Length: 80
Image (cartoon, rainbow, N blue to C red; front, top):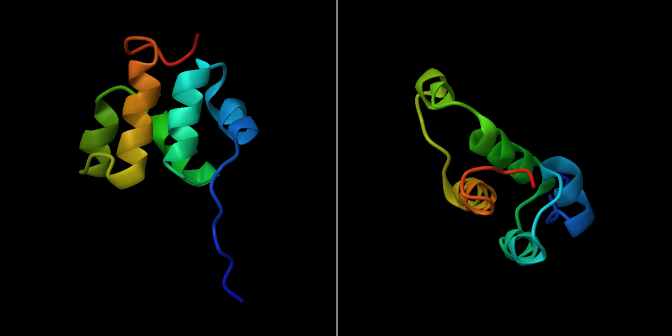
């Protein structure tokens, strides 16, 4: 049986990303990203530029959106 991925909850997002401004948290929730997508986005947002070179691609879709939200939440500094 195929399991359907569900969007991450606010609690799951906080567990992955750490403290965030409530407005940013709600914008991430609104993307309906799964916990796996939030984790991937957080990895992109906190990694050095080398990750794109090693993977030979940039984040895409909802992962890219969430990565930008986490980066922009503190002017490039993800954690508060």
